[in-house]
Length: 309
Image (cartoon, rainbow, N blue to C red; front, top):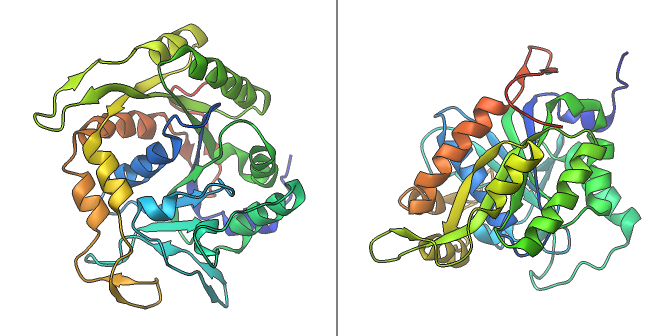
């Protein structure tokens, strides 16, 4: 059956993999996981091109985490130009970011929208942003299974073969209950799940880097085994990572086609690579890449790996 082409499918035809990061509950560190996933995919290959889309419309946090606060989105003849986080290094920039946070006059302004306006904004992010050729588009979604998720999957239906999801939870029983609802949503929507990440599992000592299980741990792994979902790994609370993402500041430099050009390179990435979290997340990204479906020359996906639906 021929899939009808839409403005979204035309725009996204040169994107190989779209990874939706979701959680059933807020406060489990989903946005920080999305950021780490994008950063780790960026470093997985010297040629990997990554996009990071923030559809958490009422709580956009990715601009701050990448040190891109204060940036505006430029309009070109071919659509909106995303903000590039790595314009200060050698070669072409390879990490594009789009968020409603770039469109707010003041970053403290609230977004008070009903479903139809959220739907229109998500459609515009997918159809009007000049993403270009990407190996991976990471989509950070809000907690739960709400309007944003339904709109996202509706607009991405023509490229469904390239979609997959990563579920984020913490080890606590309350978070696991909501993660189960998120997993139920992916099954209802026939969205392949690459696996589950147990976040905030343990604590990284800021002095020696040793990981200690001062809180509960293992709940996410147990749930993954019970539900037949691949377990990607666990990430501890890392004070160094929190400091990097919280303290990220907008770069100082000059404007250009890809936004602001930093004089000292991609600070967030450079600092992140030195953390314990980066070393642990590298193993998770390796599993993610192995589980992604193969994509043929037309951009159509073929079943591969250990994804579950």
